[in-house]
Length: 289
Image (cartoon, rainbow, N blue to C red; front, top):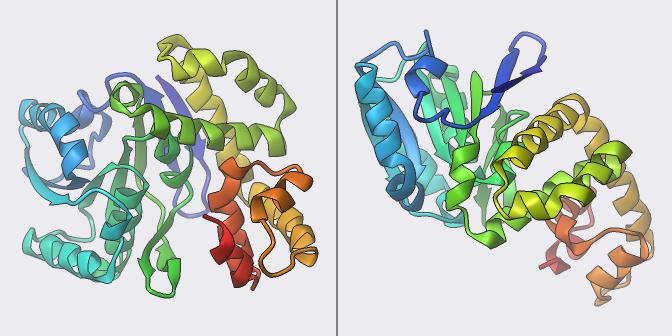
């Protein structure tokens, strides 16, 4: 198991990377599960794949799971699901010293983290990311939010997790498309901040996507180390690139062509859109599919 410290002032935590972390959940969360019932937010697909593993781990450690199971997909990051999740946490008598578990991808992590941030002026939560994209990006850094009719991630808070457990075993159940989407995010960090890591991605990418466990642990470890230390710098670099591109944008222009002319691959579209929206170029942000 690899351990990456995230040194946030006043709220440091660890990202742990390895195989079998969900099966050893109680041991990994030592001292954090104060009550017999452990509140867990997940979605139906993740629950079907990993719910039994988590339930068994909790049972072996003298706990029981209290599940909130949401529909999979971006639509769950809504006002309605946020309110319902907070009400559920209150019904479960979650206190500020308790820890709510977020078992899922970025949608579950974002929603659970935001709900935890506003419950009783802030309670703890633990990220159990089940997608590669969530393991290397959204589970680290404390960005939590929901979507609104006005746009994506416009209502939220910075609320750091108490712990992140990135279990490599969950990647074996990911669809190939989701695995590739996460790997694109990994490659981005190499492009922007670490030439040696980018070379490693180029050499080992096929093995990672084909399920080589030996390749996956250094992938996660190195990506998280780069991200944890340089998240602000990476976002700033992207924003500089997008600001330059925005100056040359004409309404109706093909966005992907413009980005390619600046050396930006369409795989970065989600971050492109976010940066342009924040930069006031909502016309360009909305034009990116």
